[in-house]
Length: 195
Image (cartoon, rainbow, N blue to C red):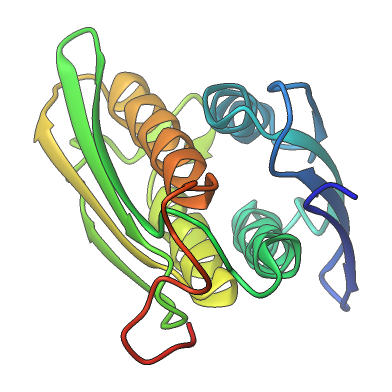
């Protein structure tokens, strides 16, 4: 049986179902009602080689905040569930991804302690109609609920679209590498014996 999870979360603000296959081929089918965010999730899944289906309905007449943050929360829960006992995984990974002039580094520790450290200054408030602050909100929810330590750092960049896309690609690729089985690891990769 593959490392998969389907998680549904319904609140007064959003109704979200996500199916995640960690050992996929990058097949992504995303519909959140937030066009730019769909584009970012597509990049995340394709470059992480995750099979990812997202269906989200949210109160976008208010703004996109609840939808974006809650997708991060549910995706984090799906990662935690799909990883199971975390036996035999690499645990740590880091990558730096260029997107034209932008360069963003992502470093991951599947630590069991969910925190996001975001140093990604974006010089514009919007990319199209997308509020660029929501990039941080998404990754904070993802890291917290997945139980991973996630560092995202912009090393170079001018264009807001490029910076955000590099961040999503970098996080996807780093998560892919950290989640991958390592044939040399026996049990859980921790001196404590648990993550």
